[in-house]
Image 1 (spheres, one colour):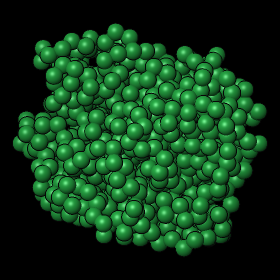
Image 2 (cartoon, rainbow, N blue to C red):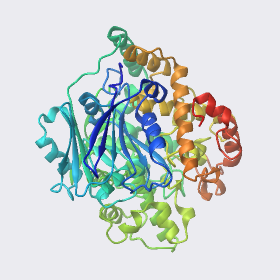
Image 3 (spheres, rainbow, N blue to C red):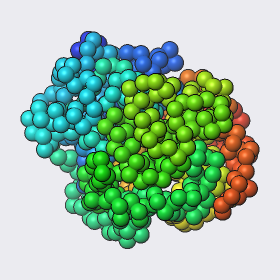
Image 4 (tube, helix red, strand yellow):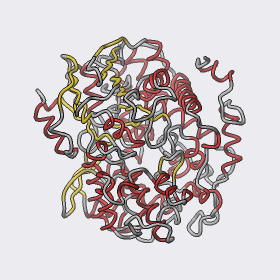
Length: 594
């Protein structure tokens, strides 16, 4: 099959058994790969009786049919598991080279089960797969681990390391897997599941190239795709010049830039932490993931070190969310999260929640708004579960519940929110509430149509009528995650171009509707998984603050999220019943009937 290698490897860490099986073509076409393939496997094999840290939970590395091809920005891969943070189905998506090298080694997916008796790493190359002792790596940070494993690789130039740091080893519920030192499989605690299996790293290496069914046609379509990327102001100017931090001023100008744990929607020290200031003060050079013509990454430097980022979300979470405007401290905290293997969003928002509890006199977890020193200390304490860090390592909801103050945790289904104030955006709150992995902007972000005018500007006052547009974005986001393409390419590359690329690569006729239908199938399967786990429509909700406390100032002053009518409309549009359960007719339409 062009696009898919056609092979899945199973690795049982308890027994050491390794086997390889075929990827059925129907499964590949119906679920595309990446997130979709991972969801199908997890649904079939990990039921409600399996706890996230159980050896029976799976850790599934998946690539997409476009991963490693000439398609622009096609280095993405996914890791799927049951989340220790949320208890929901979880996939987390990442760039870098790990997915590319896994596919070059000859596999569409790795299904990892069991628990090793002692720390190990998995080595995957074109000769096969082996489990290797990693006792000497346990306790080391991401950078040290990566350097050692690359030094042991037969050809470091064709190898990639995806590993955990101390946060994953210590089962921090939002620990990340870090690829190539700085690319995070970040959200939901995939790193903690990896740590629970005593798995320190997965090293992938390969040189096989992906062969398209129709290379000549593919080359032409890729040429067209790269041309539209160069024509879009976002992908040709904004992201290459300032990276994702270009959003800072835009979001603040719209009153959608939350600060002080979502108590404010603008930030008084904006100029100190803007994308322009980041470029002026810390920027060294532009960087890009493999195969990406956009280049949104940047290498930066502070007085204490160098690294990648901070990205928009990290800059916000470790900065304004905590009332901090010391740009170097924010960057240092970002570097530290990468080295220790922490999700920057959940780290910053959990610390921000603790800061609000301290301000209100509810609890003192050792951090205070505006105190960069305490924030930096908390990052290290969380990773090692030291002192107050042990409570923070449980995530904002559990930490706040311990103090009887759950309403101050800015989360949905226990996943901390990213840098978008829902009260200033029409249906972004609905997006957070209905996301299958919890409060997340990457499951149907309304940033494009509501804030940036891509593909066109729509009403963002919260009026009805844009729910269908959110559902469209949820489906196409699932398709992007499953194909192996970065969503930033989606600011310019249309679904029609993606479908044409799929046809040229696989030799199977694809049209845009196929991608949307696959995205809807994946979304509904994830919903079914969560329903089976005991989640209900009552979990499709937001903190009371966002629904009951109007914004005090800024362009969106006076607004709240009117979730109830949006949710009713959302269920109806989706073909679900009033309790958020997909109807039989919908499941039959998607091929998901029992």
